[in-house]
Image (cartoon, rainbow, N blue to C red; front, side, top):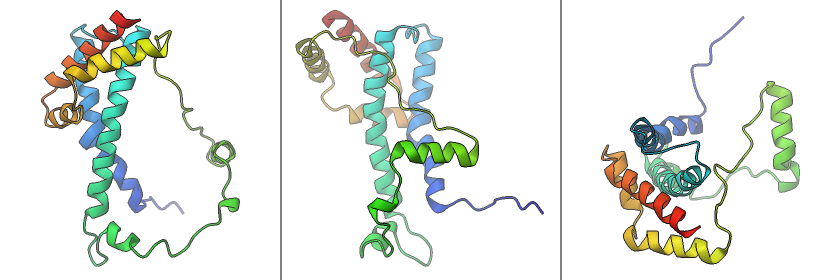
Length: 176
């Protein structure tokens, strides 16, 4: 007898939140740049810059979503922060947990699927750490508070994020 799975594990519900609050906004802005032919995703340097800036913005967004999630009220239970206040009631000893490589292989064997391996998105174009630092400093002079780029993007104002990304690409190209 087949019973459809209608209840996700509580933590599984956080991914749609992350996508709708962070990822989809940044993806939409990137797609607009590609459609306008302002961004060439076949260019390794551009991919590197997209990865660097967008990764940082996603990390900021992820942190905010998790903080919000942990403060939300669960009917009849309180908030995740309150529930975690007394610590984890059941702890699994570290030695019982498989190493990440082994866990990924077990996942593949049991589910017949594989996880996407972590990879770099674009290759670091800098020959020296000095060049990289110079480009980062030039970017930081103009965009000292990148969290503002995320705030604007998640409110569907993509212009600051797009401009910052294009500036980063130009600055990086100038310094390599």
